[in-house]
Image (cartoon, rainbow, N blue to C red):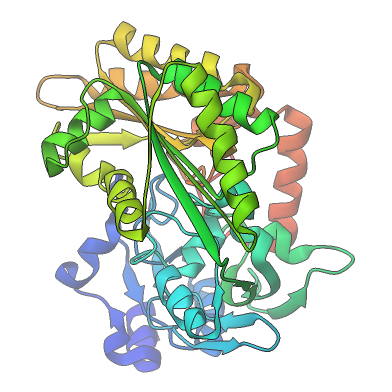
Amino acid sequence: MGLREELRAAFGPRALLSPAEKGVYRYDAILVGEAPLAVVLPESTAEVQALVRLSQRHGVPLVPRGAGSGLSGGAVPLGEALVVAFTRMTRLEVDPLGRTAWAEPGVTTAQLSQAARPYGLFYPPDPASSHTSTLGGNLGENAGGPLCFKYGVTGDYVLELEWVDGEGEVWRLSREAYDLPGLLIGSEGTLGLITGARLRLLPLPRYRATLMALFPGVEALAEAVSQGIALGAVPAKLEFMDKSAVNAVEAYLGMGLPRDRALLLVETDGDDRELVEEELSLLERTALELGAEVKRARDEGEAEALWRARRSVSPALGRLRPKRVNEDIAVPRSALPRVVGELEALGRAFGLLLVQFGHIGDGNLHPNILYDPRLEPEERVWALAHEIARVALRHGGVLSGEHGIGFMKRPFMAEALDPATLGFLRRVKAALDPRGVLNPGKVLP
């Protein structure tokens, strides 16, 4: 029996075979790959296991996929492959007494948070795409979000992981002794296909306080962040937007933001109201000392209005140019003022619109290169992306804070890691996926 016949027999209409059905699975949020041989939507771990064994028999690789909101090409097929779309694996069970949840990979991040809230609990990882991105994708990329500075990233909340390896074996392990689940988190589906996770939940904090600070430039903003944290502030959220991002959001929303200012949003939280206010005051003080105009939110409504500006960056930037490359680097906080200044200078040197925003408290920056391919050659865009990566490495940072390597940053890996480390990573890949069927062409150069 041929591949198509086996897929039809095993999955029926959940095996998408026509060009129209499978065409959209070539894409993620930025990049385009090749049309897959087929797309399969499994509904259980047993079906994922069957798919891996089918791929072995026919010599066809597998590309795991969540909601397709990724930004580095990790879920994009690069050659003849079967795409495994996990959006139908959506079992979710909350254990309020144990403060945990068991979730399958097709559950969205927002669904988990909503399910936990009635019990006074929450799930801290909150990528901007939380209403669409799935937990499987979050696990594959080790996603973070605005809360990552205080609360950590996806991997910090995984207690137990279930996955299918490259030989079709199912594993369900906790993170004791040898942390095998930790190897899979952030591996972008190259070491195993995640089919479930037990995740840690936290009690909702009782108090929050929010302020907005407007700076004359992004370097002064970064300096204020470094100084405030050095004084002992541990805010829940520290998000920034450079002048171009602020101008774009104001043009999009018309919410009264002063133009040509860099914007910092700070939120502190906790169960002690005085401590929450004290931490906010530390950031307020350093902002004022560095020439910022500061506004505190008086209530939840004002705080929500301020955060709306940050959430609107992506659609606002989409109005400026038809295409963009959303870069994602992470650098030590001590290097932030120098890094943001160097990135501004790079944009000018390349003659391209470079817009910066991101989770600055964690040193996670999202420099976006906006361009019109009819007027600006894509070769220059990708050359600038490479130089952005080099800035991060030069200052002791890494290529990705949360978007992953995929195939977009794969060519940079030889500069980021020494040959011995790369050799060790290849040995890990060979041990867990000896036939090389899991998401080939991603991560490792």
